[in-house]
Amino acid sequence: MNKRHEHLQHMHLNYVKQLTREKRFVRLTQLVIFVSFFAFWEIATSRHWIDPLIFSSPGRVWNMFLVRIQDGSLLTHASVTLFETVLGFILGTALGTILAAILWWSPFLTRVLDPYLVVLNSMPKVALGPILIVALGPGMQSIIAMGVLISVIITTIVVYNAFKGVDHNYLKVIQSFGATKQQSFFSVILPASYPTIISTLKVNVGLSWVGVIVGEFLVSKQGLGYMIHYGFQVFNFTMVMLALLIIAVLATCMYQLVEFLERKLIHKHQV
Amino acid sequence: MAFLELNKVEKTFFSKETLTEAIRDINFSVDEGEFISIIGPSGCGKTTLLSLISGLILPTKGSIKLDGREIKKPTPETGYMLQQDYLFPWLSIEKNITLGLKTMGKLSNKTKKHALYLLREMGLGDKAKNYPNELSGGMRQRVALVRMLSTDPKLLLLDEPFSALDYQTKLKLEDLVFSTIREHKKTAILVTHDIGEAIAMSDRVIMLSDRPGTIQRIFHIPEELKSRLPFEARNHSLFNKSFQEVWKELESLEQTS
Ligand SMILES: Nc1ncnc2c1ncn2[C@@H]1O[C@H](COP(=O)(O)OP(=O)(O)O)[C@@H](O)[C@H]1O
Ligand SMILES: [Mg+2]
Image 1 (cartoon, rainbow over the protein chains, first blue to last red):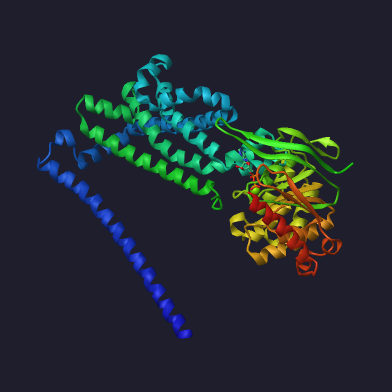
Image 2: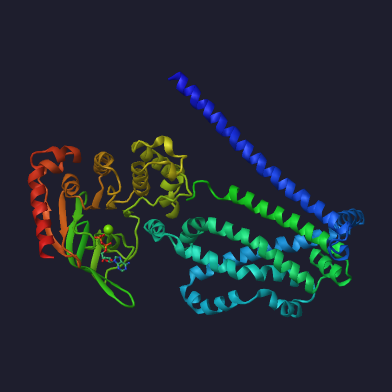
């Protein structure tokens, strides 16, 4: 018996070792790809396999990064864009959820608004950019509005469907205690839909970046979108690449943050 | 005047394409402290009947009176236990059993203590901080029972509360529910498709016919069985006779349809 147990323990140990080994190998491969990409980029441009004027090079991007950090301009651009994106993201999600709640509240309104929602949802929202700028002025408001606009309709639709999909029997339970519509909403509908709302957060992170960058292409004098647009116009592709890399890092961080929130907020018992 | 009175109750469901007559011409009354079971073929309108009594839905025709007052919406006097436990998975057991109190605005230290006392009475005192998915089916059903009892309703409506449980758990819970209801002097209406359960637990068994459900027959359970715990009643010599009687009636129902 004891021997058997020892044997099993030994096997388990081997299994864990194997897992660690596999994980290490995955990490290593990822690192190799990362390093080779930049190495290849650097070599290919320095040997003129690809045009350094168009593709810049890691060295040049790095130098510009240092310069722009020192003169503080990069920080300004990045923080402006980040601010717009976070605000657009939060407003888009919150507004979408509130709209969904209103729709849930009034079946009449839902039926009336249904075709409009379909049209608005199919519409490429960035095409509305010029109208936003005319209406709200060529400033930060328009850019944030773009970040909101791009995510709000889809959030409304997805969250409304989650509200509607909540098992009616949970409502019966609380209604048998004489619950008002408001109590039904806050005690059943909303908590039962948390997982869906959180997963729309993840989608909206990506959408808000799209909205804000396009917004900055159109109007801004600041921000990472502006850096890309300006760099393109003056043929400074080092600037474009730098902005792209910063966006990649920031968007990833934001996504990770939302995932962290997801783990915190969604109760592990919610099924 | 009886505690609960149903008078020519009729319920038809309408949709754009169809109209479903669920129950028709239901007349019966229940005295305070009585235990009634409702049995009948599936789809004959048992759940509909309970929903009507609970006030969650309204009859198409006829009247349902509780304590002489017409039921127009759910009242605190009635507790309703659905076919499954429907505990809220995002709430702890403690939060689940106080849900009714909170909804009614009756949550206080005293009522919460009482709810926790009921939970202990059900043998789940140590589960207050757990979550529904950490409990077995039988435990969850007991929690649902506590959730209903915590608001101290006078009339209990139980819709096949034991149908999803294994046989042993079911027998144990029958005894527990029976004695709890007796002890707290509640009136109860139990829907079940188990003839034995209906006989073992109740004072009267109302059998509904196929849809649209009408009252097929009402069986009066002998005094000797009424007073005993369900498990003992099942083993009593008179049990089999009642069982046969109900069984034959149900058989004849199935033959005519
Ligand atoms: N909300 C509803 N809308 C339409 N038809 C319903 C509704 N609820 C129940 N029914 C119909 O009424 C009949 C009785 O249902 P139910 O009361 O659930 O039966 P039972 O509980 O006896 O199995 C069934 O034919 C069912 O399809
Ligand atoms: Mg039913």
